[in-house]
Length: 147
Image (tube, rainbow, N blue to C red):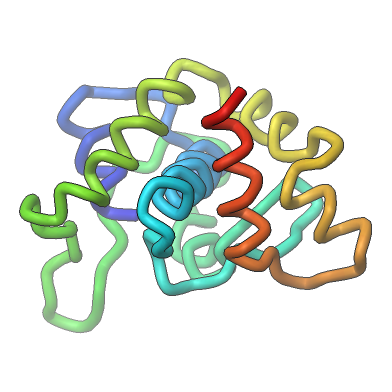
């Protein structure tokens, strides 16, 4: 998440709310799964009413409410925030894909997009799942890439 926030801070974005951060993380994760077969993060996306959410990140960012996220998520007592090493070009390529496709879209619209029929969130919710399997996310984004 902090790598995504780093880019937002560097570009001076004023629209990186907790909801938008969650959705951008989901799209980065999805494109990473589609292009590498590997997850971008090691936390599962949960099926929440407003779309896919990583619970631990929600709790880290909830103090911002609907406002702009203005600080990194701390990694632990006395440790600096984790920003992924620039040598992880695969991750930054996925972040670039998601950024180019989605950063200009308002958070509420990104949330609505995650609710579209046939989306991983929609399928997981329809099947009563609490978490969205990475395989489901990967297959969905592979499908997006071939459209």
